[in-house]
Image (cartoon, rainbow, N blue to C red):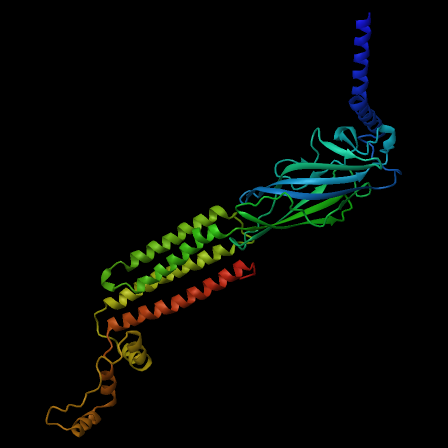
Length: 425
Protein backbone atom coordinates (compact mmCIF):
# COMPACT_ATOMS: atom_id res chain seq x y z
CA UNK A 1 0.00 0.00 0.00
CA UNK A 2 2.82 2.38 0.85
CA UNK A 3 4.39 1.65 -2.55
CA UNK A 4 1.14 2.43 -4.31
CA UNK A 5 0.70 5.63 -2.29
CA UNK A 6 4.20 6.78 -3.25
CA UNK A 7 3.62 6.01 -6.93
CA UNK A 8 0.32 7.84 -6.89
CA UNK A 9 1.95 10.88 -5.29
CA UNK A 10 4.74 10.98 -7.89
CA UNK A 11 2.31 10.71 -10.77
CA UNK A 12 0.20 13.48 -9.29
CA UNK A 13 3.17 15.86 -9.02
CA UNK A 14 4.23 15.09 -12.59
CA UNK A 15 0.73 15.75 -13.96
CA UNK A 16 0.38 19.00 -12.07
CA UNK A 17 3.74 20.19 -13.33
CA UNK A 18 2.79 19.27 -16.91
CA UNK A 19 -0.53 21.07 -16.61
CA UNK A 20 1.12 24.19 -15.31
CA UNK A 21 3.70 24.36 -18.10
CA UNK A 22 1.89 22.89 -21.08
CA UNK A 23 -1.67 21.81 -20.81
CA UNK A 24 -2.89 25.08 -19.43
CA UNK A 25 -1.64 27.04 -22.46
CA UNK A 26 -3.01 24.54 -24.97
CA UNK A 27 -6.43 24.60 -23.34
CA UNK A 28 -6.51 28.39 -23.50
CA UNK A 29 -5.58 28.40 -27.18
CA UNK A 30 -8.16 25.76 -28.01
CA UNK A 31 -10.83 27.57 -26.02
CA UNK A 32 -9.94 30.87 -27.69
CA UNK A 33 -10.07 29.25 -31.13
CA UNK A 34 -13.53 27.83 -30.47
CA UNK A 35 -14.67 31.14 -29.04
CA UNK A 36 -13.42 33.21 -32.02
CA UNK A 37 -14.71 30.93 -34.76
CA UNK A 38 -18.11 30.68 -33.08
CA UNK A 39 -18.52 34.45 -33.05
CA UNK A 40 -17.94 35.02 -36.77
CA UNK A 41 -19.23 33.57 -40.04
CA UNK A 42 -17.48 32.77 -43.30
CA UNK A 43 -20.47 34.03 -45.35
CA UNK A 44 -21.90 37.13 -43.65
CA UNK A 45 -19.83 40.28 -44.00
CA UNK A 46 -18.57 41.17 -40.49
CA UNK A 47 -19.65 44.82 -40.22
CA UNK A 48 -21.30 46.50 -37.22
CA UNK A 49 -24.08 47.96 -39.35
CA UNK A 50 -25.37 46.20 -42.44
CA UNK A 51 -25.29 49.55 -44.29
CA UNK A 52 -21.54 49.95 -43.63
CA UNK A 53 -18.93 49.07 -46.23
CA UNK A 54 -16.18 46.61 -45.55
CA UNK A 55 -12.69 48.13 -46.02
CA UNK A 56 -9.88 45.74 -47.02
CA UNK A 57 -6.29 46.98 -47.20
CA UNK A 58 -3.81 45.29 -49.54
CA UNK A 59 -0.04 45.56 -49.96
CA UNK A 60 2.12 43.47 -52.29
CA UNK A 61 5.68 42.15 -52.47
CA UNK A 62 7.22 40.97 -55.73
CA UNK A 63 9.41 37.89 -55.31
CA UNK A 64 10.39 36.90 -58.83
CA UNK A 65 9.60 37.34 -62.50
CA UNK A 66 9.46 33.69 -63.52
CA UNK A 67 8.58 34.02 -67.20
CA UNK A 68 7.39 36.53 -69.74
CA UNK A 69 6.31 34.91 -73.00
CA UNK A 70 6.17 37.74 -75.51
CA UNK A 71 4.47 35.73 -78.23
CA UNK A 72 1.54 34.56 -76.07
CA UNK A 73 1.62 37.47 -73.62
CA UNK A 74 1.78 35.22 -70.54
CA UNK A 75 3.35 36.87 -67.51
CA UNK A 76 4.29 34.58 -64.60
CA UNK A 77 5.03 36.35 -61.31
CA UNK A 78 5.61 35.15 -57.77
CA UNK A 79 3.87 37.61 -55.43
CA UNK A 80 3.23 37.90 -51.70
CA UNK A 81 0.19 39.83 -50.47
CA UNK A 82 -0.55 41.27 -47.05
CA UNK A 83 -4.29 41.75 -46.65
CA UNK A 84 -5.85 43.33 -43.56
CA UNK A 85 -9.38 44.16 -42.40
CA UNK A 86 -11.39 44.51 -39.20
CA UNK A 87 -13.88 41.81 -38.26
CA UNK A 88 -16.44 43.39 -35.94
CA UNK A 89 -17.45 39.95 -34.61
CA UNK A 90 -13.98 39.10 -33.33
CA UNK A 91 -13.00 40.45 -29.90
CA UNK A 92 -11.74 38.96 -26.65
CA UNK A 93 -10.01 39.85 -23.42
CA UNK A 94 -6.49 38.42 -23.43
CA UNK A 95 -6.58 37.93 -19.62
CA UNK A 96 -9.48 35.51 -20.00
CA UNK A 97 -7.39 33.23 -22.22
CA UNK A 98 -3.98 33.11 -20.55
CA UNK A 99 -2.76 36.42 -22.01
CA UNK A 100 -3.16 35.36 -25.65
CA UNK A 101 -3.04 38.56 -27.71
CA UNK A 102 -3.15 36.92 -31.14
CA UNK A 103 -4.44 33.73 -32.71
CA UNK A 104 -3.74 31.85 -35.91
CA UNK A 105 -6.89 30.49 -37.55
CA UNK A 106 -7.77 28.70 -40.75
CA UNK A 107 -9.17 30.98 -43.40
CA UNK A 108 -12.05 28.57 -43.92
CA UNK A 109 -13.33 29.33 -40.40
CA UNK A 110 -13.58 33.13 -40.71
CA UNK A 111 -14.87 35.62 -43.25
CA UNK A 112 -12.58 36.19 -46.25
CA UNK A 113 -12.92 38.85 -48.99
CA UNK A 114 -12.75 36.30 -51.89
CA UNK A 115 -10.42 38.21 -54.24
CA UNK A 116 -9.43 37.20 -57.78
CA UNK A 117 -7.31 38.52 -60.63
CA UNK A 118 -9.07 39.87 -63.69
CA UNK A 119 -6.16 39.38 -66.13
CA UNK A 120 -5.72 35.66 -65.43
CA UNK A 121 -4.09 33.82 -68.32
CA UNK A 122 -5.82 30.45 -68.50
CA UNK A 123 -8.70 30.53 -66.01
CA UNK A 124 -9.90 32.99 -63.38
CA UNK A 125 -7.25 32.81 -60.67
CA UNK A 126 -8.18 33.49 -57.06
CA UNK A 127 -6.02 35.01 -54.38
CA UNK A 128 -7.50 32.68 -51.77
CA UNK A 129 -5.55 29.50 -51.11
CA UNK A 130 -7.10 26.40 -49.65
CA UNK A 131 -6.17 25.67 -46.01
CA UNK A 132 -4.39 29.01 -45.62
CA UNK A 133 -3.79 30.69 -42.25
CA UNK A 134 -4.52 34.18 -40.92
CA UNK A 135 -3.68 36.05 -37.74
CA UNK A 136 -6.46 37.63 -35.69
CA UNK A 137 -6.07 40.07 -32.80
CA UNK A 138 -8.28 40.99 -29.82
CA UNK A 139 -9.47 44.27 -31.41
CA UNK A 140 -10.84 42.40 -34.45
CA UNK A 141 -7.89 43.05 -36.79
CA UNK A 142 -7.33 40.21 -39.27
CA UNK A 143 -3.95 40.02 -41.03
CA UNK A 144 -3.57 37.57 -43.86
CA UNK A 145 -0.22 36.84 -45.52
CA UNK A 146 -0.44 34.75 -48.65
CA UNK A 147 1.81 33.97 -51.59
CA UNK A 148 0.76 33.06 -55.09
CA UNK A 149 2.27 32.32 -58.49
CA UNK A 150 0.27 34.57 -60.77
CA UNK A 151 -0.30 33.67 -64.43
CA UNK A 152 -1.51 36.91 -65.98
CA UNK A 153 -2.03 38.27 -69.48
CA UNK A 154 0.05 41.29 -70.47
CA UNK A 155 -0.25 43.06 -73.79
CA UNK A 156 3.29 43.23 -75.18
CA UNK A 157 4.38 46.53 -76.73
CA UNK A 158 7.54 45.77 -78.72
CA UNK A 159 7.64 49.11 -80.53
CA UNK A 160 11.13 49.91 -79.26
CA UNK A 161 12.56 46.39 -79.28
CA UNK A 162 15.20 45.55 -78.02
CA UNK A 163 15.20 48.63 -75.73
CA UNK A 164 11.50 48.36 -74.90
CA UNK A 165 9.84 48.82 -71.52
CA UNK A 166 6.79 46.72 -70.70
CA UNK A 167 3.99 48.02 -68.49
CA UNK A 168 1.76 45.22 -67.20
CA UNK A 169 -1.36 46.08 -65.16
CA UNK A 170 -2.95 43.34 -63.05
CA UNK A 171 -6.34 44.11 -61.46
CA UNK A 172 -7.37 42.56 -58.16
CA UNK A 173 -11.14 42.52 -57.74
CA UNK A 174 -13.99 40.74 -55.96
CA UNK A 175 -16.75 39.33 -58.14
CA UNK A 176 -19.04 38.56 -55.18
CA UNK A 177 -19.26 42.10 -53.80
CA UNK A 178 -20.14 45.45 -55.30
CA UNK A 179 -18.39 48.74 -54.66
CA UNK A 180 -21.13 49.59 -52.15
CA UNK A 181 -20.35 46.51 -50.06
CA UNK A 182 -16.57 46.24 -50.23
CA UNK A 183 -13.77 48.80 -50.66
CA UNK A 184 -10.23 47.81 -51.64
CA UNK A 185 -7.48 50.27 -50.71
CA UNK A 186 -3.70 50.10 -50.76
CA UNK A 187 -1.70 50.29 -47.57
CA UNK A 188 1.47 50.97 -49.62
CA UNK A 189 1.78 53.19 -52.69
CA UNK A 190 4.47 51.00 -54.26
CA UNK A 191 4.97 47.28 -54.74
CA UNK A 192 7.71 46.36 -52.27
CA UNK A 193 10.93 44.61 -53.35
CA UNK A 194 12.19 43.13 -50.08
CA UNK A 195 12.18 39.57 -51.47
CA UNK A 196 12.84 40.28 -55.15
CA UNK A 197 15.37 38.19 -57.11
CA UNK A 198 16.84 39.63 -60.32
CA UNK A 199 15.83 38.19 -63.68
CA UNK A 200 18.37 37.51 -66.45
CA UNK A 201 16.17 38.85 -69.27
CA UNK A 202 14.20 41.67 -67.66
CA UNK A 203 15.11 44.41 -65.20
CA UNK A 204 12.39 45.33 -62.73
CA UNK A 205 11.97 49.11 -62.63
CA UNK A 206 9.08 49.79 -60.28
CA UNK A 207 5.60 48.73 -59.29
CA UNK A 208 2.65 50.96 -58.51
CA UNK A 209 -0.65 50.29 -56.76
CA UNK A 210 -3.55 52.26 -58.19
CA UNK A 211 -6.95 52.51 -56.53
CA UNK A 212 -9.68 52.36 -59.16
CA UNK A 213 -13.10 53.92 -58.81
CA UNK A 214 -15.59 51.47 -60.24
CA UNK A 215 -19.36 51.40 -59.80
CA UNK A 216 -19.59 47.65 -60.35
CA UNK A 217 -16.93 45.80 -58.37
CA UNK A 218 -14.12 46.93 -56.07
CA UNK A 219 -10.81 47.10 -57.91
CA UNK A 220 -7.16 47.55 -57.09
CA UNK A 221 -4.62 47.60 -59.92
CA UNK A 222 -0.97 46.58 -59.62
CA UNK A 223 1.15 48.11 -62.39
CA UNK A 224 4.50 46.41 -63.05
CA UNK A 225 7.26 48.11 -65.07
CA UNK A 226 9.93 45.93 -66.68
CA UNK A 227 12.74 46.91 -69.04
CA UNK A 228 14.38 44.40 -71.36
CA UNK A 229 18.06 43.61 -70.93
CA UNK A 230 19.27 44.40 -74.44
CA UNK A 231 22.90 43.22 -74.27
CA UNK A 232 22.16 39.86 -75.88
CA UNK A 233 20.24 41.39 -78.79
CA UNK A 234 22.91 44.04 -79.35
CA UNK A 235 25.54 41.32 -79.78
CA UNK A 236 23.25 38.85 -81.53
CA UNK A 237 21.35 41.11 -83.95
CA UNK A 238 22.39 44.76 -84.06
CA UNK A 239 26.17 44.39 -84.33
CA UNK A 240 26.03 41.71 -87.09
CA UNK A 241 23.64 43.93 -89.09
CA UNK A 242 26.09 46.85 -88.75
CA UNK A 243 29.01 44.67 -89.87
CA UNK A 244 27.04 43.30 -92.82
CA UNK A 245 26.06 46.81 -93.88
CA UNK A 246 29.71 47.87 -94.00
CA UNK A 247 30.64 44.66 -95.77
CA UNK A 248 27.95 45.42 -98.31
CA UNK A 249 29.56 48.79 -99.09
CA UNK A 250 32.91 47.16 -99.83
CA UNK A 251 31.61 46.05 -103.23
CA UNK A 252 32.47 49.55 -104.49
CA UNK A 253 36.07 49.07 -103.33
CA UNK A 254 36.51 45.64 -104.90
CA UNK A 255 38.34 45.66 -108.26
CA UNK A 256 36.07 45.29 -111.26
CA UNK A 257 38.27 42.51 -112.58
CA UNK A 258 37.49 40.45 -109.48
CA UNK A 259 34.09 39.67 -110.96
CA UNK A 260 32.29 38.94 -107.64
CA UNK A 261 30.66 42.28 -106.92
CA UNK A 262 27.11 41.19 -107.68
CA UNK A 263 27.38 37.88 -105.82
CA UNK A 264 28.69 39.61 -102.67
CA UNK A 265 25.85 42.16 -102.80
CA UNK A 266 23.26 39.39 -103.28
CA UNK A 267 24.66 37.29 -100.42
CA UNK A 268 24.56 40.27 -98.05
CA UNK A 269 20.97 41.01 -99.04
CA UNK A 270 19.95 37.42 -98.22
CA UNK A 271 21.74 37.72 -94.84
CA UNK A 272 19.47 40.65 -93.94
CA UNK A 273 16.46 38.48 -94.78
CA UNK A 274 17.75 35.81 -92.37
CA UNK A 275 18.14 38.36 -89.57
CA UNK A 276 14.61 39.57 -90.13
CA UNK A 277 13.43 36.01 -89.48
CA UNK A 278 15.50 35.88 -86.28
CA UNK A 279 13.94 39.12 -85.02
CA UNK A 280 10.50 37.78 -85.90
CA UNK A 281 11.06 34.84 -83.53
CA UNK A 282 11.58 37.19 -80.57
CA UNK A 283 8.94 39.83 -81.32
CA UNK A 284 5.17 39.19 -81.28
CA UNK A 285 3.51 39.49 -84.72
CA UNK A 286 1.70 42.78 -84.24
CA UNK A 287 0.67 45.23 -86.94
CA UNK A 288 -0.23 48.07 -84.64
CA UNK A 289 2.15 49.23 -83.46
CA UNK A 290 4.79 47.63 -85.66
CA UNK A 291 8.23 47.38 -83.99
CA UNK A 292 10.57 50.03 -85.33
CA UNK A 293 13.34 47.50 -85.75
CA UNK A 294 11.32 45.99 -88.62
CA UNK A 295 11.29 49.41 -90.29
CA UNK A 296 15.03 49.61 -89.76
CA UNK A 297 15.60 46.16 -91.26
CA UNK A 298 13.41 47.13 -94.22
CA UNK A 299 15.58 50.24 -94.64
CA UNK A 300 18.72 48.06 -94.54
CA UNK A 301 17.23 45.69 -97.12
CA UNK A 302 16.29 48.60 -99.37
CA UNK A 303 19.77 49.98 -98.78
CA UNK A 304 21.28 46.62 -99.81
CA UNK A 305 19.01 46.45 -102.86
CA UNK A 306 20.15 49.94 -103.88
CA UNK A 307 23.79 48.88 -103.54
CA UNK A 308 23.13 45.84 -105.70
CA UNK A 309 21.51 47.97 -108.41
CA UNK A 310 24.27 50.60 -108.28
CA UNK A 311 26.82 47.80 -108.46
CA UNK A 312 25.27 46.59 -111.70
CA UNK A 313 25.30 50.13 -113.08
CA UNK A 314 28.96 50.50 -112.09
CA UNK A 315 29.86 47.27 -113.87
CA UNK A 316 28.03 48.50 -116.93
CA UNK A 317 30.02 51.74 -116.91
CA UNK A 318 33.37 49.98 -116.47
CA UNK A 319 32.69 47.48 -119.24
CA UNK A 320 31.79 49.99 -121.93
CA UNK A 321 34.29 50.33 -124.77
CA UNK A 322 32.48 52.87 -126.93
CA UNK A 323 33.72 56.43 -127.19
CA UNK A 324 32.70 58.70 -124.35
CA UNK A 325 29.74 60.83 -125.44
CA UNK A 326 30.09 64.56 -125.66
CA UNK A 327 27.79 65.20 -122.67
CA UNK A 328 29.98 62.92 -120.52
CA UNK A 329 33.06 64.85 -121.60
CA UNK A 330 31.35 68.13 -120.82
CA UNK A 331 30.30 66.89 -117.38
CA UNK A 332 33.74 65.48 -116.66
CA UNK A 333 35.47 68.63 -117.89
CA UNK A 334 33.38 71.44 -116.48
CA UNK A 335 31.53 69.87 -113.51
CA UNK A 336 33.90 67.19 -112.16
CA UNK A 337 37.27 68.22 -113.50
CA UNK A 338 38.90 68.87 -110.18
CA UNK A 339 36.68 66.36 -108.42
CA UNK A 340 37.91 63.54 -110.65
CA UNK A 341 41.53 64.34 -109.91
CA UNK A 342 41.01 64.40 -106.15
CA UNK A 343 38.62 61.45 -105.88
CA UNK A 344 40.88 59.35 -108.10
CA UNK A 345 43.95 60.50 -106.16
CA UNK A 346 45.46 62.05 -109.31
CA UNK A 347 46.76 65.53 -108.51
CA UNK A 348 47.45 66.30 -112.13
CA UNK A 349 45.29 65.98 -115.19
CA UNK A 350 45.90 62.99 -117.37
CA UNK A 351 46.31 65.01 -120.52
CA UNK A 352 47.16 68.61 -119.83
CA UNK A 353 47.79 71.42 -122.24
CA UNK A 354 51.05 71.39 -124.19
CA UNK A 355 54.00 72.06 -121.92
CA UNK A 356 56.90 74.37 -122.98
CA UNK A 357 60.03 72.57 -124.04
CA UNK A 358 63.47 73.96 -123.12
CA UNK A 359 65.68 71.29 -124.72
CA UNK A 360 64.80 72.09 -128.30
CA UNK A 361 65.51 75.05 -130.41
CA UNK A 362 62.03 76.44 -129.93
CA UNK A 363 61.65 79.23 -127.44
CA UNK A 364 59.07 79.53 -124.73
CA UNK A 365 57.53 82.36 -126.61
CA UNK A 366 56.97 80.15 -129.65
CA UNK A 367 55.23 77.52 -127.46
CA UNK A 368 53.00 80.15 -125.96
CA UNK A 369 52.09 81.39 -129.40
CA UNK A 370 51.29 77.83 -130.45
CA UNK A 371 48.97 77.35 -127.49
CA UNK A 372 47.24 80.62 -128.24
CA UNK A 373 46.44 79.41 -131.72
CA UNK A 374 44.41 76.46 -130.39
CA UNK A 375 40.70 76.96 -130.38
CA UNK A 376 38.75 76.93 -127.12
CA UNK A 377 37.13 73.58 -127.92
CA UNK A 378 40.48 71.93 -128.52
CA UNK A 379 41.78 73.27 -125.20
CA UNK A 380 38.85 71.77 -123.32
CA UNK A 381 39.21 68.42 -125.08
CA UNK A 382 42.93 68.24 -124.40
CA UNK A 383 42.65 69.49 -120.83
CA UNK A 384 41.24 66.25 -119.46
CA UNK A 385 41.07 62.92 -121.21
CA UNK A 386 37.79 61.47 -119.89
CA UNK A 387 37.45 57.69 -120.20
CA UNK A 388 34.81 55.18 -119.12
CA UNK A 389 37.09 53.63 -116.51
CA UNK A 390 37.58 57.05 -114.92
CA UNK A 391 33.84 57.67 -114.86
CA UNK A 392 33.28 54.21 -113.37
CA UNK A 393 35.83 54.80 -110.60
CA UNK A 394 34.32 58.20 -109.88
CA UNK A 395 30.85 56.62 -109.72
CA UNK A 396 32.07 53.94 -107.27
CA UNK A 397 33.63 56.45 -104.90
CA UNK A 398 30.66 58.78 -105.00
CA UNK A 399 28.34 55.84 -104.19
CA UNK A 400 30.64 54.70 -101.36
CA UNK A 401 30.75 58.12 -99.69
CA UNK A 402 27.07 59.00 -100.16
CA UNK A 403 25.68 55.63 -99.05
CA UNK A 404 28.00 55.51 -96.04
CA UNK A 405 26.78 58.93 -94.87
CA UNK A 406 23.14 57.96 -95.41
CA UNK A 407 23.56 54.68 -93.52
CA UNK A 408 25.29 56.16 -90.49
CA UNK A 409 22.90 59.09 -90.24
CA UNK A 410 19.86 56.79 -90.34
CA UNK A 411 21.39 54.18 -88.00
CA UNK A 412 22.48 56.65 -85.32
CA UNK A 413 19.12 58.43 -85.30
CA UNK A 414 17.24 55.13 -85.13
CA UNK A 415 19.37 53.65 -82.32
CA UNK A 416 19.26 56.86 -80.28
CA UNK A 417 15.48 57.10 -80.46
CA UNK A 418 15.00 53.38 -79.81
CA UNK A 419 17.21 53.56 -76.73
CA UNK A 420 15.31 56.56 -75.37
CA UNK A 421 11.89 55.13 -76.35
CA UNK A 422 10.93 58.14 -78.45
CA UNK A 423 8.95 58.14 -81.67
CA UNK A 424 10.67 57.85 -85.03
CA UNK A 425 7.90 57.89 -87.61
